[in-house]
Amino acid sequence: MESNEVSDRAAAAAELAALRSQRAALAERATQPWWYDALLGLLLFGFIASYSVHDNWVTLAAVAVFLLCLRGMMTLYRRLTGFWVDGFRRGPTRRAVVVWVVVALTVLGTGFAAEERWRGAMVVAGAVLGVAVVLVSRWWTRIYVAELRGQS
Image (cartoon, rainbow, N blue to C red; front, side, top):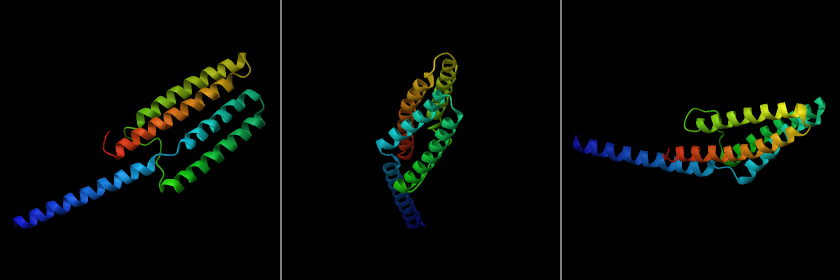
């Protein structure tokens, strides 16, 4: 009886070690390259800045380009890593998403209000949000990788 318990414990410990190793490998693959975040920031900047043109067709084209490029970035991330993680998932990453939503809504509201008075204000808002999305994306990734490694 005791030898079965010892072998069961050893098997369980080996399985746990294998799971930890797999999670560590997943954490290594999860971090996107720096240019991924830079491209995301540039795309968001272009989309938001298009509102300063005051032409609905330009903004509609910017929306289409933005969404198509986001879809392409998702596909590329899946190809690079083998998986996709929903950014709005529950867990420790939620605080980064909340910060992003608060910053985005504040900057967009301010930008739209300022655009009524000063043409080009949405270009500034786009630049601020472009930089902010890069920073929040990196922060979100660090939180997620730490979670995978069991450090959260």
